[in-house]
Image 1 (cartoon, one colour):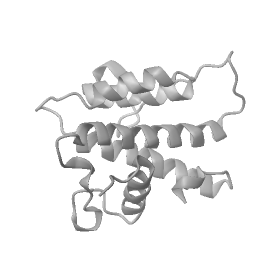
Image 2 (cartoon, helix red, strand yellow; image 1 turned 45 degrees about the vertical axis):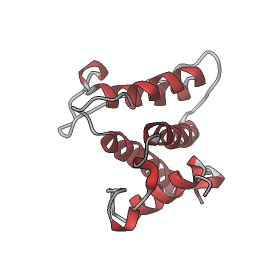
Image 3 (tube, one colour; image 1 turned 90 degrees about the vertical axis):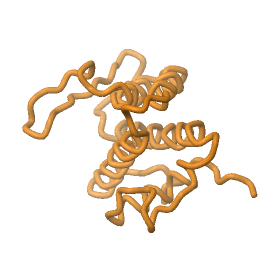
Image 4 (tube, helix red, strand yellow; image 1 turned 180 degrees about the vertical axis):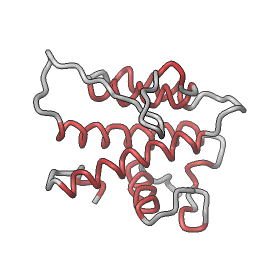
Length: 156
């Protein structure tokens, strides 16, 4: 059996997330992306698709783009206080930096940051990074729907 393309897995995960089930290991999201000897490579490929899709949709919000523009993210905690990227857990920090790299036209840095996000570390669960990427993607889809902006065709 041929493994499913990362976009197909990402599309199914987005559908599960939009249905309200954020646990891709749960009954409605039973996917093999987190199983097997190469699961980190497959998960990184799915995360890359989600990061690229989210960045594409975020660029729809930008008033202008171009080589003389740089994108930054204003990170806030639950109370609205600013959060410094360096205080985030390493996998989350790497995911944030991957999104910034994609927004700023640095695809080689996206791959490097996703490698860091998927680094083997028993203190961190890769599902947390996946859930965060899914929430960003779903939030971007919902923004696009509210503002009649395009979403990547493969997510439909």
